[in-house]
Length: 207
Picture 1 (cartoon, one colour):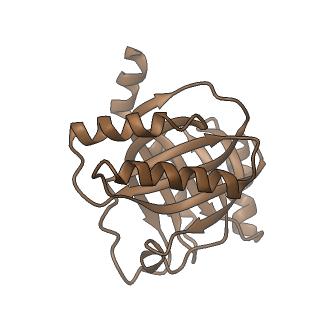
Picture 2 (spheres, helix red, strand yellow):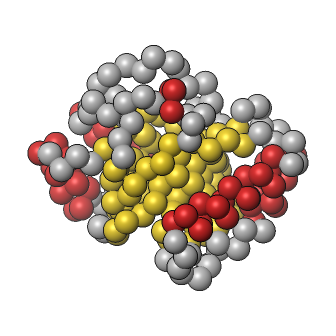
Picture 3 (tube, helix red, strand yellow):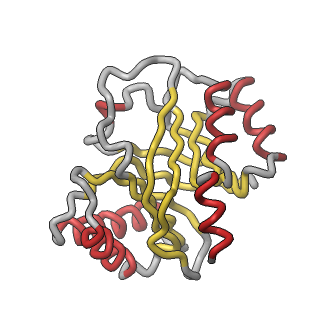
């Protein structure tokens, strides 16, 4: 759709994750996002970081507020203002593989990174493999920015090679996670090194 493509040049949509620790700061930003026109959806999630990503994000949290936003500039300003000891993340989606109707409500968001440069052929192969997972509602690629009051020991080198899958299912988070892992392995069999960054299990929809 031309209008959407034009808008994407001005601002990017995507996801933001901010640690939710039930303190004043967390509640303040939750209330702010509850009424924000920039926030389409908001969820309370459990984050499971992969062994590969843990060394880069040692100040990670277990529980996050996950929001789907329409304007990355606004959301980044808010996260800069609400710096937290634990790491916050913004995933900007600059290219969409597909979006489709699937059964069930979204209950899992799986985030990966690609270890090597992504050619057009690689992206076509990746999209084709992922599309065979009938629980994936939307698949996108983009970049990641992280925020933390405590500087990380290591710089994450794959910030511009992020893949995000939105998964809808009535099954348990464990079952969905296994299904996503099988999809990841199928992508790797195509010679594309796609590695788990974090799995976000949706516990409650807040908006």
